[in-house]
Length: 60
Image (cartoon, rainbow, N blue to C red; front, side, top):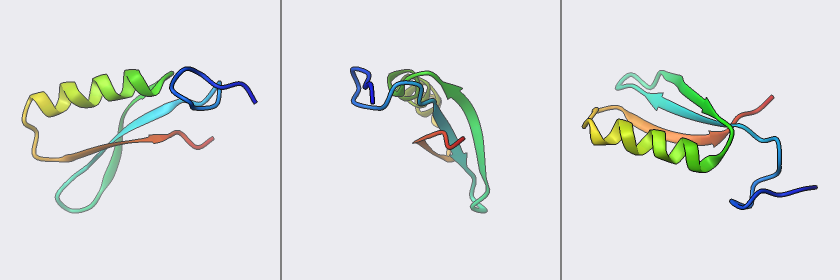
């Protein structure tokens, strides 16, 4: 299996999720690399949103 520079398998997409105060989870965006997802996460956190954001590989 081929791997990208971040150690993840090639072809894996990454989802940035938001969880609200009630525990509901929503996909905010989907990226082609973990680095892109982490950049998006940092952007949301920089705006001081109260929700919890996290990144996971997108399951097909």
